[in-house]
Amino acid sequence: MHDSFRALVHQYNTEAGIEALHYSSIEGDANSPIYLSKGLNLRDGKVGWGQWLSETEERRRYVPQPEAIRTTSYSMRLELDEEFVKLKINSIKDADKNDIRKLFYHEAGHGMQMLHHPDQSNVMYYDITGEKNFTAYFADVRTFFAN
Ligand SMILES: [Zn+2]
Image (cartoon, rainbow, N blue to C red):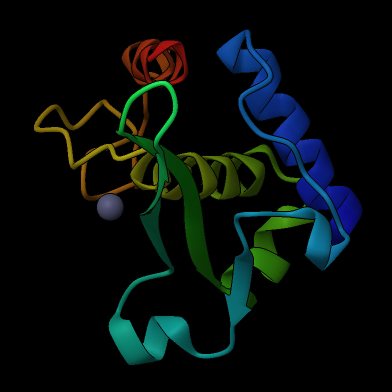
């Protein structure tokens, strides 16, 4: 499973044209977990959730003058339906590979603060079925990392 996710993240970065994501199989080495949940689809009627997290740390320094120093760090939390992932991620069928790609890219998009897009050809459209165009999506990903 780790190799499959590593390959998916590699493909993501290649398509993004930047090193947007880094995959690690070592839990302590990562700041953004991917959870595979049994029965997520049955529980929530969805095969994935993606959310972003932000944490702000404030420090104060007094020299040369009183000043608050704020550092905000962002991470994401993805939860994917285990059965859906297992069925699709190692499949040799192009349609299955594309399904896991659309799911992962969509949820990672939420992890980068993207909301649902009104255009149904955009991968951030609320429904990931059907043909998707990734051009606008990756433009948004690059903008996110440029800021
Ligand atoms: Zn969504």
